[in-house]
Length: 296
Image 1: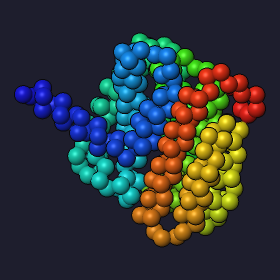
Image 2: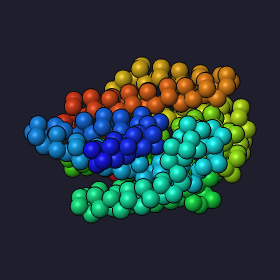
Image 3: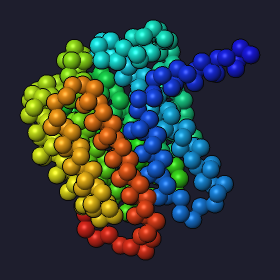
Image 4: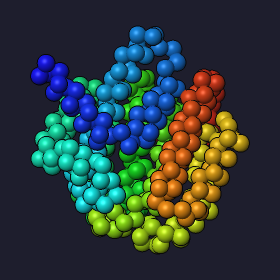
């Protein structure tokens, strides 16, 4: 009974630390990997997806533990329901879990060396974000770190199921770069907390309204151009275009942090829809050759 209660407690703690980010990790990773299952047996798909779920769980838990251990001040302002500021988990308890997850994360990568590069990149990216000055600056935080973190997530997700193809590498690079450009959306909702923790997000450095203009009129068209170069836009041009217009419109509305948070979630909904498009594109392009766009 004690062991069962302990396991339930740790599952609850894991969920408390990670639930906010499932839409940006588990969902895109699992959807993107669907494109890699062609030709695999049902048993192989099940086994590979179980491994993928385990890797993403460590990827997410390690990052969130690191981020929330070093971001207690910010969370005390913007996210008081998180485990540490709410008192559900002590700071010492979070650090103990960090050591265990870090060790386990590395052990998984050593067991499956094909994803060792992605594991190392995700650990280094987390360290860059949490303990270096560059991780507190808008360019380092989003354009570098979020791009690299997305690359690690998508690369490992595909490789957990099957070896990469030329096309899949194009999609990984395109979606990673696109994510880093558009992720400034997350910072327009956390200005007070970011300022308290010493971050220099674009909203703080350039001003809230200037940042919203840049997202809507520069980063959004650039995002569509990247999807076009990655051969993703062609799958559902109208749907993808409309999704970008909806996000751009919402970004320009100044209706408070709660509205901005919903905008961020709308962005993630459409972001994950794009992964459905990639999966559909792969299913319909076995013999297709791509000659224009990003090169791996």
